[in-house]
Image (cartoon, rainbow, N blue to C red):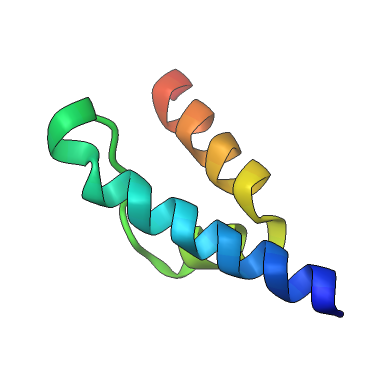
Length: 57
């Protein structure tokens, strides 16, 4: 349970840092229920997956 919470917090932090750095990098993800759920459940790999899918699609 502790590892899941740490992973969820890191996922939320990665999503927040990605959106805060978007003016400099040009990469942004919309904050919606789906992106929050993916970053919370999957952590950093979930945010990475969303960035890759956003670039491909």
